[in-house]
Length: 336
Image (cartoon, rainbow, N blue to C red; front, side, top):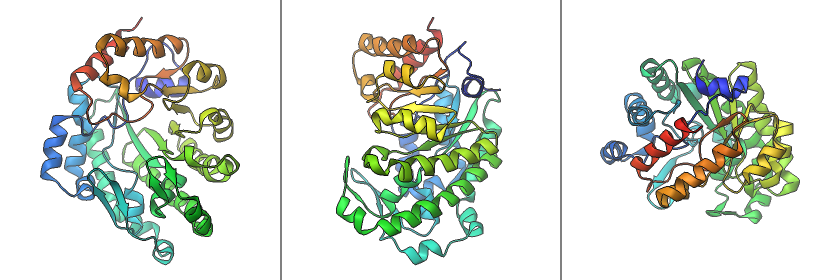
């Protein structure tokens, strides 16, 4: 069993596994080289050879405990008939949502469109050290619906007028897309992934009174699938603050990824029965080395007697220095 799985499932505290969200990505010169030759991001995600190569790039450099498959949460709306384009400095842009097109999908076509992702997982698993985990992931239904319905106004705001006018569609998307996410995860698990992470990146934008229907229940449905498949599952309901406690008690994931707004001491006291992951602000990695190590040691000390996976409170940023990251990983591994 990998260190990561042992920590999550058996609550092992003898060591601290380490991996990073977005560890396969823009901060690595070897990734930037591939990306410069592959301008279409969706096509790159569907190139099983390159996707596998990119997934393994960080493990060629660093002593990490897991690979995460190089893909994107928006591969799911793409495979359900929505155009997805990635524009520099603007992020993803999706074509107008069409309910009829969305409802006119089926499991066979959906799986066929994403077959290259599953091939990439198979190839990565074959080349990956048996002691390392391979992480599959999905975006949670609410987070995907935000993109699909074009509800985002800017980085931290959604249009509530638009949300209220599309409530009926939102409910249909959340229910239906949950089914497709379960199919997508099952296919990824069958291809060789042995850990799952669910990203609810925009959970923090949900009004408190809607958290149960838009966040807790949709995440719970996916978590239950993972438990049936006996695959450890990590949830990341970013931005919900003290509602992490309610989320944990209702959804019951095996592990919770903390965002950097969460006080680690509060997390230790309030999320006692759960394996915890991450929490540190990715921007800390831009500071002086002594400041970085101070923050790393803070998290490691607070969670010393608890099942804890070192990661961040968000994905690695493009400006991250790989040499600094290597030192952080060594710090985690050698921490006493």
